Length: 127
Length: 379
Image (tube, rainbow over the protein chains, first blue to last red):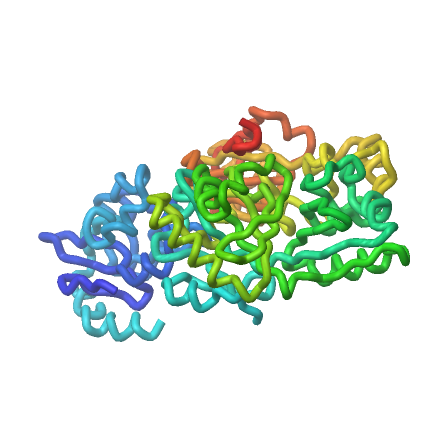
């Protein structure tokens, strides 16, 4: 299980990473491994406002569809269009080219409440 | 829960395991189900399918009994022929789908794992005194070797015996000193075969196949049940409990070709009634865009946006429901999302535009010709 130390996490296995004033979100390596081959990704449209914990899309693996939840509140400013052509990027490089969306956070203080790498590792280890 | 003799091998290889038909079976290996699917299509795949059941039928009344029991013609089968057959109930529902191998002086019948007990009870209840049915599932191991290079691999270990067998036939061969009943049959749409042999030799045969693949430079990959499902789905083969079941008849499911109406068989009268009336629903394959269609999803008469009520995006789509998906997935070879669904017959024509409700939206779906991937034996 790879854990990107620059990211923070939610126990539902989404990560958030700061990039300037925006937040890049995706699913953790632990999550992509447990799901298996990702064959479809559906995300809310750019411009949508979401609250922390709101559903923002669905990741479909070979056998099941799993909901994605916003790790932080804000406006979706970009989604990773490359996933439409190649959803397996989430498996190959979940912290890099397999990112899901970018959010302009409306409540930046939520960052402090997310799990840091060590805490998430402990949490994911339980699953 | 039961497990196969290769269970520990699968676990040691990092396979994801899950219950299937009462067995703890490998679903996929660390390479992933999509890659396994593609490996089988390009080279050779090994399948541990020991959960499948095998019955042996013999005795002076066996031939006539079998002919009356299953829908397909069997009395015309040559000495070592193998044939797909349906086991029907009196009302024409499909109790199970079988593969029947004619062997010298006996019949070898392969049944689905989840129907093994009920098939046996059904068959025995109808067997005359001159027909003996034995359940050989426990002492028989079953491995499938499938793919364009499968026969090449098997030939190397059997002195060329595997490829000498015509398609849909069987022979006896020896691999690594193990006597094997080899059927040139399968469930992937690829060439290759299925191996039946004494259960104690499971690990030896499995490892010998992998080692020979390695030695000969023939990519040989273990394949889990997830890829087994996508391989059979693309090739248009049914999975009992989905495209076929006791509440589904072969006419609506498109299996009239597996029914020989020139003979008597259980369920024949019911099927003749169904044909006279015309089936109310039919099995179709739908190509879908914008999501993965799955079992249980509803099929709607209107396609796409037309059926999605823009005023309530979160509400379930409106529009007349005309069917339901029985299996659906991403198909790695043809790179499409597709589902098999039963729809009202009027909507079953190839090219018909329909919709599939995926979560809160109706996605465009089109009735397409089956199979999505033409099996090797039909090319």
